[in-house]
Structures are given as C-alpha cells and as structure tokens.
Length: 299
Image 1 (cartoon, rainbow, N blue to C red):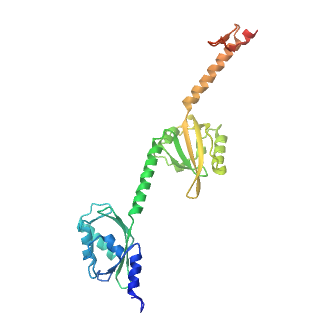
Image 2 (tube, rainbow, N blue to C red):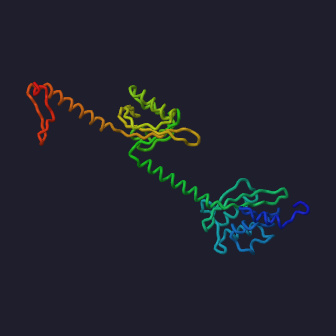
Image 3 (cartoon, rainbow, N blue to C red):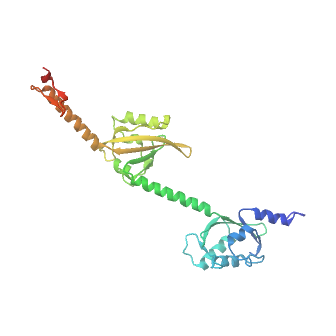
C-alpha cells in the first residue's frame, strides 16, 4: 500500500520513466498494473494488458503468434504447451533471472520476485544491444583464434613466472607438444638447452621485470621429444586483467641456421685453400677490378 496522501499519478510517472518494463500481479496471478515500457516489450494489443487478466492468458497470448508477435525459448525446440508450463513454473517459483528471444529478434531478460502478500513483481529488461555486443566479441575472438591457429609462427603467452598460458597449433608443432598437453603445465625455461639457459633467463627477466619488448634473438631450445632446434624468438610484455603477461613469437630456423653454417664452413675452406696454395691466384671481375689476391700472388 502507498503511504497516506501519496499521489498515485506521481507513482505512474515514476514507473513510466523507468527503462525496464514493470508489472505487478496479485496472489491470484491477475494483473494489477504495468508501466509503459512493459507494455512495449510485451508487444501485445492494449486489450490484453488490462487489470484482472491472468498471467497465464498473457503468456499464452505472447507465445502463440498474436498480432505478429511470438516468443521462442532460448535454445528453441520446446513445444508451445511445454514452454508455457515451464514459464508458468518460473513465474510461480522465481529463483534467478533468465532470458528469451522474441520472434522479432529482441532479447528480453526476465526477473520475477514474490511480494510479501503473495503477489509477483515482474521486471523485463531489453538486452538486445548487450547480446549483439556479446556476439560481436565472440565473432572477434573466433576470427582472432582462426588467425592465430593459421599462423606459421609459434605464438605463446606466459605469466610473470614464465608459466605457460597459451600455445597455438604452430607452436605445438615446433615444440613437439601434443594437443592434449595443457600449456599451464609448461615453463619457458624448460625448453632452454644448458648453453642457452642464461640467455633464456635474461629474456624472461627483460620481458617481465623490465617490461621491454625484445628484439629477435636466435636461441637453441629442446623440443618435447628431446631434439634440439634453433629458433628465432621475440617477446613483448602486456597487461591483462591487472596481470603482466608476455607474448612470445618464435619460429624454427634450424634449416636456415644449418645452411648458413655450411656456407660459412665452405667459405672458410675456400679461404684456407686460397691462402695455403703455392700458386699465385688472382680473381678479377669483368671490369678488371681485383677481387682476391692470395699470399702466393703477393710473394
């Protein structure tokens, strides 16, 4: 009951200014009154939303296609009668809010609560914009995950202690780690060889403590199967949820490193032969410029 002398017109103005739809049903489940927003969200003709109408009648009118408006339960697939009975049960024994989508695509959150005299206070909130934002975020996350998984480079994330948080498909292939292995059980220093461990520790301290993005570093690591490979690694720290994490990009350059080593060895052998030859050897280009002049030629 309203306080003595409280203007009922003011109460109506207050309820109509509320962004949520509000309706009150008595202990016999008959409509006592609604605000304008509730009538809008129901999408029913005015003759349905009159005091004394039972909640079940309103529910059936909104579920069955009336005036082009129908409702379908979240997840779909329930027969109309089963859905009506489910909604009636939720109305009579309200516990926690739930959501449903109308035939027009609008999402509504339902919050019901019992009053002291056995009636029911119904609050309806339009969450369509929120659902669209959530869908956009999910789509963005899905596209990002596809890009990450399609990357030829290994992508990993670890925390400030070096404990793993994420590892993409390419990273698992490079490190020889199966899909069943949880990155949380991996530590970045666990992949360092004995010779490369000091460098790996320096990279960890720089990325986490100093907060510096590292330039690409070539480092030897040990795969999950025990094979040693050469990788190019770069790391960049970032903040997420108030926690410092480190994003690591890496690739297997063992073939490139081996080719480079063979080239250097070949050049060293050629230089050794050139310098130890008894014959004078002079190399010149097509314009007559001297390229090489070995010691025998100098003598």
